[in-house]
Amino acid sequence: MSATVLRVFSRSIVILLMTSVFAREAKGTWKVLFTNPKSISYSFSSGFFFDEKTGFIGADGRQGVFKTIDSGFTWALIPLTPAPVSSPGVIPIPIQDIHMQSRLHGWLTLEDAVGPAVYETTDGGDTWIGTSYRGDCGSVYQTPAAVIVTNRGIGGGGAVSMDSGKTFTHLQILDSTNGIAFVDDLHGVVTGFFDTTWSRTADGGLTWQKSWSAIHNEAWSVYGASGTPNFYVAGENNWAMSPLNESFVVRSTDYGATWSKLTNLPFRSTGHIAGVDDSVLYIQAASDDDNLSTGPLSFYRSTDRGRIWYSVGGPSRRSDTRFMVLGDRGEVVIAF
Image (cartoon, rainbow, N blue to C red; front, side, top):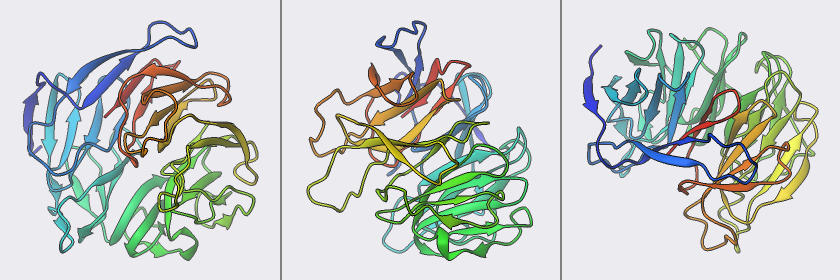
């Protein structure tokens, strides 16, 4: 493995939440986990953790991917091959998503790169090799049938691969899209960028159809409760609209065919939502919410399937930032 091993530093932008008290309104205990030791122009924005010991975090693709196997005590900095090159006039190349299909096999995506925008690992993240996909890639997900990528910008557009990432076929219905989630091998949802209508699939991502009843607000991600027909979204809303609005939570109980609003939030979210099954959900308030918030700019937790949300402390973050939820009861959150 070609990597630089780094010790934990005294200050951090990666935060670990461990909630030992499970009362609905209990604040979490947050502690420093890791600080990026390099001066980069783009902060941490994505990650994937198998458990509390092993996981990945990403910031600028030119820097590489950070991997830990000892709960964040040490980190290996692993370069991408080939090294990403930024688009003209663009400095950062953000790693927008990391999705591991297994302990050995996974994918990550880049935006604003000239060259590969999807990278693959087959050795547990010890190496990351560029694929043939080009463009501004947002999210990636693999089912037994396909590898699906979203694209909110320029280039190849949203696409699927039916040969394990060797080639990608453009699907116009996936253009101007953001998040991907599946609740089983067949049923998935893709959310839109800006005011693009969301889409759903019932065949593992090979074909998609519009969910015309969906609320068309922009959403960086979508959360699917595994083994159920339930999907949740807490989008950051259409950032170009004036005035901006606070976020709200919507849910589908029929695999994304129809959606209903659960509650309005007293803040604008980062656009990301994650959890454990249907038992606990988390949302992070956006630090760039233009003073919309009437509640704490922190993490929020729901234990009643998204109806009521309680602040549990922790950081706010800019829009389009992910976090990871671990544990049987969602007692560990890794955030930025």
